[in-house]
Amino acid sequence: MDACRLFLSLVLMMSTPRGKSEASKSSCLNLDQDFYSLIKGEAFYYVSYAMDDTKLPDENITWYKNGPEIKNMTTNETHRIHYHGGALLFLNISANDSGTYTARHITPSGECFYYHLKIEVFNEINRENLTFGSIKNSDQNKKIPCPQHIEDTCTTFNGNFTWFKGTNLLPGHHEATLRVENAQKDDEDIYTCICTWTHNHKVYNSSGSRKLFVVGVRVKLNCTVYCGINAKLDCKASWRINGEPVNQMNGYNETTKLEIEDLSKNTFSTAILTIEMVSAKDFQHEFKCYGSGLYTTNATTFTFKQRESILPLITAGVCVFVVGVFAAVLLKYFAIDLALLFRPYFLPGRDNQDGRVYDAYVVYQTQSLDKETEKKLSNFVTKTLPSVLEDKCGYRLFIQGRDDIPGEDRVELVERCIKQSRRLMVILTPGSGSEMIKDPTSDHTSVIGGFDWQVGLHHALVQREMSVILIQLGETGSQGYTHLPPGLQHLIHKSAPIRWPEGLQKASKWNSHFWKRVQYLMPATPAKKSDLSTMI
Ligand SMILES: *[C@@H]1O[C@H](CO)[C@@H](O)[C@H](O)[C@H]1NC(C)=O
Ligand SMILES: *[C@@H]1O[C@H](CO)[C@@H](O)[C@H](O)[C@H]1NC(C)=O
Ligand SMILES: *[C@@H]1O[C@H](CO)[C@@H](O)[C@H](O)[C@H]1NC(C)=O
Ligand SMILES: *[C@@H]1O[C@H](CO)[C@@H](O)[C@H](O)[C@H]1NC(C)=O
Ligand SMILES: *[C@@H]1O[C@H](CO)[C@@H](O)[C@H](O)[C@H]1NC(C)=O
Ligand SMILES: *[C@@H]1O[C@H](CO)[C@@H](O)[C@H](O)[C@H]1NC(C)=O
Ligand SMILES: *[C@@H]1O[C@H](CO)[C@@H](O)[C@H](O)[C@H]1NC(C)=O
Ligand SMILES: *[C@@H]1O[C@H](CO)[C@@H](O)[C@H](O)[C@H]1NC(C)=O
Ligand SMILES: *[C@@H]1O[C@H](CO)[C@@H](O)[C@H](O)[C@H]1NC(C)=O
Ligand SMILES: *[C@@H]1O[C@H](CO)[C@@H](O)[C@H](O)[C@H]1NC(C)=O
Ligand SMILES: *[C@@H]1O[C@H](CO)[C@@H](O)[C@H](O)[C@H]1NC(C)=O
Image (cartoon, rainbow, N blue to C red; front, side):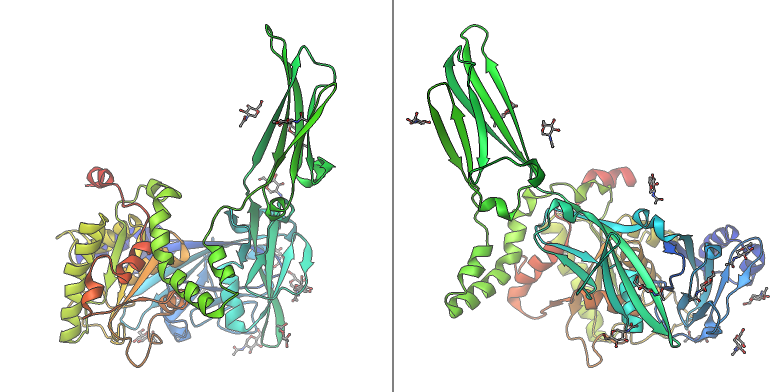
């Protein structure tokens, strides 16, 4: 423990209610506070994502509630609030439970962490204001995932999901993700998933809500009819949809206006049909504009055409099975190329406005590796990775070990640089993390479960600030990923690591499939160089 880190921890400690007495005992690293809004009468199962091992002995963690007087939490399972291993449980939450809770955790390697949790308890009627992130995209079919902590609770206790739209039960929906096919404006609502789970033979509910926004393309169709000179009698343009007059109830709106030019007295009638949100059904409709004058009537027809998309490739392939399979394989393989090709045209710069300096923060295990792996890893991290992502693609990486600034306090540096990065890139090596014993003579911050990982996973999982890119170097080894910290396993479960096919000449080319996959996961546009110069 260097003096600098001790000082930082001391400063952090001062601000916690436990004050100096605890701080003088040992130094503990404060992790960022998690915040949850909860509903009275429900249950809440909390595990900090920064926690490596949820099965730790109860003695190694203590939870207490902050306040004028500190209340120790119990491990007695009959109590309404208790903790067990890495988890804190609130059963039948009451309004009085609002407040901040802190856990002090000593890891096997002797490191000490403070986890902070803040909860606020609300009544059911406030649900509309307690949503966990909204769904707002232009997809026709929407996916509404149950908030992650509820899904985790349901997985842990083998519970059942039910879904509500507003206050109405949606029968037959028991998945962690609700799908709304061909979403229309009236699908816009607050969706709530309730997980019903059992603990010690009692049934509990935990719920979370999300707001769905249905954003669609709004289209205006103008139809102008020329009726002649000074022909304002009976000059009228109007729209009909499938032969029917426009019905405002169906998301259509028609306005008409008559115009007579000042000098020429040319007379026009314009009908503007507004389609609030173009949906699939509009592709089957016939839109017809009628122009009527005093003596004649004329009409013109308009239909929507689906833009050419890659979808028909798959559907058309159904006719001939062999062709279908081929097309699907081809499409899957080329999907990334297609996405990369078109990416600059979509969401240009959206990612780029976050002001972050690095495109990725690269972490890897540096200790307890065999010689051969160490050599491969070092080669990949210091040569291959920068030569492609930095030199060819123009990304800016923070590579642990390479970019550390000598003399700078590591704890502070890691926190700051991770916050300045848009992706966390985790390089997994065979047997990563299998060796967790700390060598007291050196600063083992890079062993899995060490500090960089903790902070990185925390930002990725809890704060959802950055996405993670997992790269597997070589084989996984016999144990698979089971030995890794649960936070990391959770990520691996969500998206399989990209395997670096070492030794393959083809793969090392910068335009290989491997690098395309990596590039696809990287931000669309590299971080601006100018941001960097302002920071340094
Ligand atoms: C709470 O627990 C800590 C140790 O975990 C102990 O030092 C303290 O006295 C306890 N406080 C109360 C009020 O029981
Ligand atoms: C748990 O608490 C209940 C009620 O407060 C008590 O009866 C029981 O003995 C406690 N169990 C343990 C193991 O302390
Ligand atoms: C939950 O707690 C409230 C008081 O806060 C109590 O009235 C109610 O009976 C409890 N419900 C259950 C299921 O224990
Ligand atoms: C909540 O706290 C108040 C005052 O602290 C107390 O009077 C009340 O009984 C508590 N209610 C519950 C449900 O514990
Ligand atoms: C529990 O803490 C002790 C030190 O207090 C440590 O030796 C032991 O390895 C820890 N165990 C686990 C599983 O965290
Ligand atoms: C939700 O929030 C809005 C704006 O803050 C407020 O006007 C409304 O009353 C709140 N609804 C409930 C049920 O608290
Ligand atoms: C979940 O559903 C299964 C099957 O429908 C049922 O057997 C089980 O009791 C349910 N669990 C809870 C907690 O409701
Ligand atoms: C759980 O939620 C369901 C659906 O709202 C409700 O029917 C049930 O009574 C709730 N159970 C508990 C224990 O709160
Ligand atoms: C449609 O009509 C509106 C109002 O007259 C006008 O502002 C708009 O430019 C017209 N659009 C087209 C494509 O002609
Ligand atoms: C129809 O469009 C006009 C002009 O854009 C607007 O003033 C009117 O409120 C709209 N009516 C409906 C029902 O949306
Ligand atoms: C309707 O308009 C088209 C051109 O827009 C014209 O060719 C056609 O002759 C018109 N029909 C009648 C009946 O006026």
